Image (cartoon, rainbow, N blue to C red; front, side, top):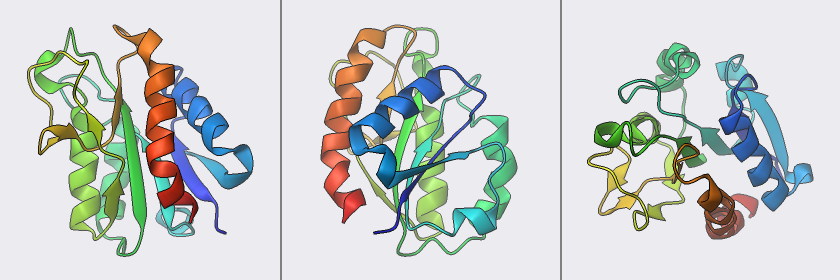
Length: 169
């Protein structure tokens, strides 16, 4: 079995902590951690299954390290590759664009032929708008470490349980 690529910025705190919890749930032996700030297309294509960390920056933007990789990502052949997305956001102070980075990346991946798994319910969140919304659900896992940190552990555990078999087969 090929390993899963979990891609996040090694220079973050909240994303790194969430990534470590995901790794613990899935198993260290099944995942390779890759630094989003240094990823290349060649390294990216070595995998068929991915978990991407996408914190929303500012007013609904991808972090600059993802922005820098997007032009290359858009040209990569992602057909047959599976992606699970998680992101961090602040639903209180950025209610109008909560978790937008997850939705932005989902669109980029799908346009390049990739498959997104791991949608989650919006119940328990309070926000105005999100690009991560599709058919009444989030297209990935959204975590709010600023306002709902106590819920993150269970949300991660439930999400990994829902995506685990799809990523591990």
